Image (cartoon, rainbow, N blue to C red):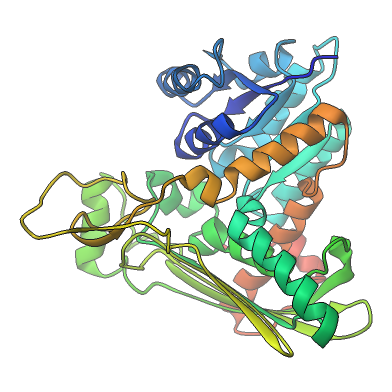
Length: 405
């Protein structure tokens, strides 16, 4: 059996490139292929893998089905648009059934799907293949969160009792690509795009190390969504200029979301998580904060503080870009610089974990089933905001609920 996991990517965009950059720090992995909506993006992303030395033979495939059927591919990372989750899994299923040896794993980027019904279908297709799965949630592998949780539970919880409140906020000025702004394609706005990170990170912080995910049961979700910035005429016009034909004011999703979730422990204690996400934050990069509070201790993590800062006066001008930190909103003033974003945000850690799990046949920490539960909580949040009431996440109606047509 090979001691290198040969992986391929579905999707040639921003997130695939982040993953590929992180693989410089991951052993026993080689990128062998990319499929994408366009041959051009597949070729460009395969070229990046070759350039970085993490995929010397990486090549573009004409289709996902062809890639899944290729015996040179051991595992697949799905990083394509939200509206292609089910169809991508169907293509992988069609290709994988032509193989002599089975795929060793499939990873899928957050969110697992646009709705709970789609998430369950994605999970079902993987189960029919009998393949190991991984849910790509990088925040659980971010070094700051992993180390912070380990210390707080070891030193605080063991002496004073378990933590009872987790807060998580992720906010920036808006997505890179047009499809995020189209509810029919993305399935939602900032809640679906970003609160998946915050909900899962907060749950994980509240979960005792080594305990099963089921040790915390969500019992109530109370949420609010809003459009604070991008439906205003001036800013809607900016979006239309950036993405010709996009009429956000007429067909918006949401650019702000807040959710409070009540969790019950196995011994009956009630815990809380508070999460916020927005596409209307203006600042030096991201707002990316986490808190964990217990009876006699607390943890504060600000991932936007990179430890490196540079100041540029108004005399220093240049083209707009994201060469200093993801989602930077300016090129002047006091600017954070991220020395290694793929590692800081957990991409290196998660890819190390999933590749080793698939390589050695061990169960990944996060699987499609976990992604399904995150989608369930987000659908409960959408319904809570729409109906102005607290939602029980076990409600059967969530299986057919769609926040947008």
